[in-house]
Length: 441
Ligand SMILES: CC(C)(COP(=O)(O)OP(=O)(O)OC[C@H]1O[C@@H](n2cnc3c(N)ncnc32)[C@H](O)[C@@H]1OP(=O)(O)O)[C@@H](O)C(=O)NCCC(=O)NCCS
Figure 1 (spheres, rainbow, N blue to C red):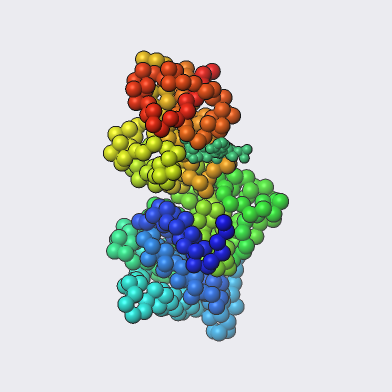
Figure 2: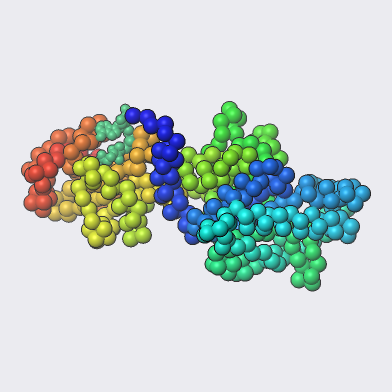
């Protein structure tokens, strides 16, 4: 029955988000926002979401841009902004305007972050923001005859310094400024700072909160996921991508190639977009990663908690037999898991009976959110291939409710006599599971 009580909807959303919240705890997220976001009346709400991410246990580095704010300061001073190759040319006068604009914006962001989770008696009042000379810059120099003067690029990042602040629970706020070892100040691009910092601190995620809408394929469908080769193909395809998105995509390719992290492009105009992207299955933006996000792999002891979360509801329903944590820890080498970006969404066990040439596929389960997409088939085929590789010509399953599903996949009804002797003694008559057998090619 559908329940449209707002409280229930909120509760359902929260319950569904819990595994994602747990998966992000102690993970480092670098978030980049353009200066345009700060002009929006929704800016405090965006910063509140970022502060909430920290409150939920993520380690947060926030990098802000300041292009419109710098432009406004230049105009106030009667200076005309100069650009070449898409970059600002910063002379000594312009640098004054840059420092002024960035200083003011920074103070505003710090104020808003202090306010967002604060208030009497709220734990968020302890949320602290750190900043400093963590980015070492070098001048862009003269390019195609144009001297960019105080426009620079990232030369080095003091990753250890940033990590110390994160270890201390602070949000690290970085501005598009860098310092040369001789103490000169350079105006940098916020995107460059965010990308280099994400690589230097080995972040788990880099999130670009974008001004342009979502990234779409030529058929106008939102692109939810892209591997690096797919992103490169998109960039090379000459498709009419908004300049901002193309630039973020190039940064994503660059950083994913040197460091295996996830890059998210999220439309910052969507209320709560950042939280939806990180804490829900479908997300809302585009995720770029080096490898496809889901992979089948052998389970390790670190996966025991995730496997238990997955199978315990099915055990309560009587679909799977009960396994204790200790039991699972002892048998962990028998298990395979389907890992979706750190979340265990599927599992299965393979128990072998060497003297008979047969193996049992057991505890096959998928998270309910991920069923019906062919992953069950994928997992079953993987287990069969594993059995074959280990020299077994026959596999069997015991099931109470999934008989049809296995029959549709080439399994034939069997009896207790078809089970290896060692398994026959363990057969639970009271449970009365049905037995299905398949010969492997
Ligand atoms: C069985 C299970 C692994 C299948 O995963 P899945 O990703 O949904 O499977 P696929 O996408 O490959 O196949 C989906 C098809 O199987 C059908 N199906 C799912 N569960 C079924 C069941 N118990 N009995 C019969 N058919 C079933 C679906 O209706 C769907 O059919 P359709 O394509 O005609 O609509 C998954 O449903 C699950 O985890 N179930 C609970 C645990 C379980 O029963 N495990 C087996 C223990 S022995």
